[in-house]
Structure formats: structure tokens, C-alpha cells
Image 1 (tube, helix red, strand yellow):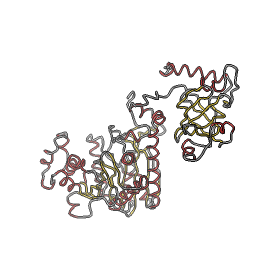
Image 2 (image 1 turned 180 degrees about the vertical axis):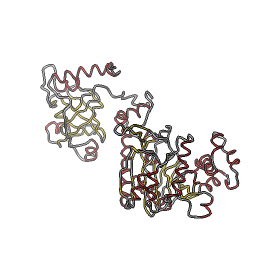
Image 3 (image 1 turned 45 degrees about the vertical axis):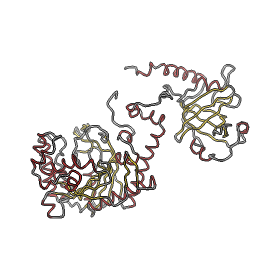
Length: 514
């Protein structure tokens, strides 16, 4: 077995020697439990302007007794006393160790090694320690704990990044997120924001009568999106399986089963490229409601975004990426054709397919030659209109070629033009959700899915295989329904101001060595 590179690191060797010395002194460097009674932030808030007392009072125990636990991030010896900073989940607080009154739990002082010398010589920056002592304020006004007892909770064998240069390399920050969280506390705040957003979504949907469910990640047949799947082998059945590319199909089966309003927040996997807004593994929210349609989904989306903004910031106006965005409902609604005309200056109803292809010079001519009229309209939208959709827009009434799972438009004229009741929501020029009035005609559904399967057989890696079980379920009665899907990660990007999806994922996918 290859010896890890870090085993030759000088600090690893030195700290390993210290670990052996600590064990030889009879101290357990990795105790099982330590329960602090206070946090750095709570103490700072409690004593923000309150009188505390001075060090002499803390030394005699007349000030409040507290205990904290955290990572040692700063240490400086000043003769009789030593000062340190420890960092816990909430922030940092100063600690003072005293030559006469500070003891180390489990350590018996020796003539050549006092308790404060043990702390100075055997405990390193990055080690996790517990502190019991009394609170006071220094002459400079800094809230400090006079340490009476110090407990070593975790002896570290590798150092943290240098405190001056910090952790600037983005690749290291993404791959070694634990170091990023230690060195950059604002990253922790971002992930707390992510958690608050997801919690609000759950609360909002439950209040609207939606039930949270869980559906399989491993599937026999994949579907619900245009994407290439990840494949694996189920050894127990000697069967090829797929990581889901969407939550859609099993959730619709639950509607068939009589579960009227359902939603799921879960991981989906698409074997596709990686860029500023795409990661092959991401978190999706999908919502389905029986007897609703895409108009209801527009209202739901608007109210959800508006509610998140008010919950987080108390306003619907956000300053993001140099723009001021107003999420207050209702949002602008515009058909795909209309958006191309308004923002791209192109009236697609006056153009032949060849004239449309001529305006798509950045696309592969061979692919364009195979593309039907509806697909060309969608490409014109992406090319000429999408980047202009800075304020929230619902782009409605898409060509049927863009999806095999959506109901034809109820307006006979629009249905004759091959348009479906689908919308996508755009903010800052990017897509944030995708929604349909769901197709529940089993005959048309089978025809469209057969078309997808034929595309797959012809070499389209993003087309779906034929899912006969899903069609069987539709044959047994899918009620009229509306459905919508959100990318949770992009939603967090919007509300945090993050410019890359990697910033809002705990552990984004990285190339080895990147």
C-alpha cells in the first residue's frame, strides 16, 4: 500500500511525536464526549454591553463560570499568562491561560513541564480543546475566559493553512471543504442560508397541503428530462440500473395512486458537463398537484420565491450580480414566441425553417438540419431572448418538441401550432424552474415517448427509453395535474449572490488534482 504523501510532512512527523508523548503521560487525546455549556457567539451576545468583571475577579471565581469547546486558532505566550483564540461553530472567543491556576485535565504537572508549558509545547494550532473557567473583560475591553481547566479533545496531526495567506485556491476550497469552513467563516453562513431556504420550502408546501415523499434514486428505466444517465449494475439481480435524472415519473405514479399533492427534495444525477450553473449531481425540488395546471404553478412559484425573500431579508428586492431584482408577485408572463420578438427582434411566425437555421450560426449545421421547427424556435429563444430576462419572467407556451410529458395547449389555435402548456421561469438570464400542465392522455403520451425511444435508438444520448410501466400507470388514470421542478442549488445561488454552483454545494464534483 502506498504511503500517503502527508505522512512525510514535517508537521505530521512532529505532531505524531507529540501525540506519542501525550499518550505516554496518560492523557487520552481523543475522549468520547465533552458538552460545553456556552458558545462564543452566545457569550458575546450576552455580555455585549453588560458589566463582566476583571481578571482578578475571574481568578477567584466570582464572575460567571462558563465552558466552551473549539479549535485553537491563535496562541501567544506572555510570561505568567498566555492568550489564545478558540473557534467554535458560532465564532471565536479569547482564552487566557494562567501559570498558577490553569490545569490540564488528566495531566500531572512535573518540575520540567507545568500545565501552561504543556499547553504551549504539546498543544498545536488546530487542536480542539475544551475550556472551563470564568468570564472577564481585559483592559482593552475584549471578552475573555480565564481558563481553569483545559481538556484536550482532539490532537491534530496536520496543520491548518497559514493564517496570513489563508485558503485562497478555489480548487482546494471546493475539494477540501472542511478547511474552507474553518478558514472562511462566511462559507458556513452561506450553508446556513441554504438550510433556511430548504426549511422554508418544506414549511410553505406543507401549509399548501403538499405531502413530502421519497422515491427511488436507482431506477430500472430513467426519464423525466433530456439527459444522459449514470449507469450501474445491481449485482443481486444482475441487472443494469440508472441513477435518476429527474423525480418526475414516480411522483406522477403517486398521483395516479390518489396522492393528490406531493413534493420531493432529492438528489438527481445527469452525466453532463460541468460549468458555472451545472454539476452532474444536484438537488432538485419537484411538486405535483392533482387538478391544478401550469397557471397554478406560476402562482406557486412566485409566492414561493417572494416568501423566501421576505423570510431571509424582509424585502422582495435583491441586489445580485450588479442588478436589482424584484421578486414581488405577480411576475411578467410572455410566450416563447413573444419573447423572441420583443428581446431578439425576430418574428418566428414569418420565418421558414431554413430562415431560422440561417440565424443560428453558432450551432452545428448537421444538428440544425435535423431539428424540427419547434426545436428551432427553442434555439432562437436561447440565442436571442434568454440573456435579456433579468427581472423574473415566466416564458410560457413552448413548442411540443421541447418535451414529451406536457399537455397540448387548451387553446385550439395554439394546439394546432404545436404549442404545449409549459413554462420556464428566468431570472438574471438563467432558468430557475420548469413546469407543465401534465399530459394525462395515455395514447398521446405513448406516441411521444415512442418518439423519444426512436431518437435514442438513432443515437441521441439524451433521449429517454420507452417506459411502458409509466404508460400503464397513465392508462389507469392520471388526474388533471400541474407540476413544477426547481434546481435548489440555483435557487440558493440567487439568494446568496453566489456566482458558481460550486459555491453552494458542500462537495462539488472535481477533477482529481484540480
